[in-house]
Image (cartoon, rainbow, N blue to C red; front, side):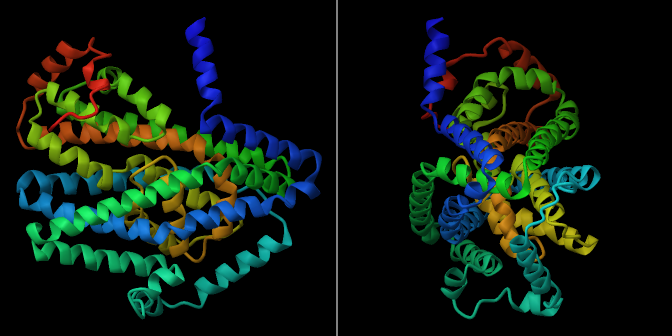
Length: 439
């Protein structure tokens, strides 16, 4: 009883609890006093604007660091090349899962957002997209200056600069680029600390966003938002079961046994809404399966930048949900364009809880046909999808290390099975608390 009481008290002190309470209060206000509720919109606008303020630097730093580390990966030889190939293929499959489910179920189709202000905003987005030819779109990727991309908040231009800068770091050589990469990692950490500070105001943003949404669009919108959350969890489970399950079977182990063995880490990920706190424990546990420290040390950290299955599913579903909710019909060409854009912008979704929402904003900034004002719809429920993103990413990165070890013939299926069976009852072990494991 004491443990249960302490657990409940601990949860009531968490940010998730206050966000949940803010969402409920916002929904109640929207239901009972729609006029007052719509006046709460500035709280959501201010919070989203504050997050968008730091999107550019985070995307630039994350992509640049990722490319520089990818350069190191390629230099180690065949394992690194196989890792990058695996990441991109499996992440693309995850993205296709999200797009397919969104196109089949159409969760935002019946949201029916009728207010005049939003319809005018949508018209401007559609006009902007229609008046931009493909040639102009490609030319516009190149900024007029290095800093103008950041001052104007043009995400594709920032991505373009990031790729050039990352390529230059690879070409200059590891020894010369190492101090710059370390500096960038420190600055990136600082920006994520800023995000953490901003997240303390998340309950206000969630309250304003939900109050405005319910007050403006009616209480029926809650059903659509609940459907989106449920659909995201369903799609993630489907991807894990079918895609990662098939990969696990090919490697010679049971996915369910592997997940059960990783239960402590999964609980840690769920509680933190981020997969990073469990990374040292995951790396240590993978070595218990017989995978070499070199492979684990190479694949797992790289996977945290390049193998974001849950984030890709989320971004595909959320993007199409917003488009459907605002009645924007995307052509097959525009949907196809979403794939490479999400694959690029999702690389910046590492770090802390909530970073997936930041990269969703970055994605919508690149696709002019999808109204970015729709972020207000998603923000209130983003926290409930953050845990699923993190869990899917965590499971995906563990399976990736196993698959690449098998692909490289580093360990046999029999050895993997025997090692997993030998350690399957070792659920709570030192790896859970050993945060400074050296790989």
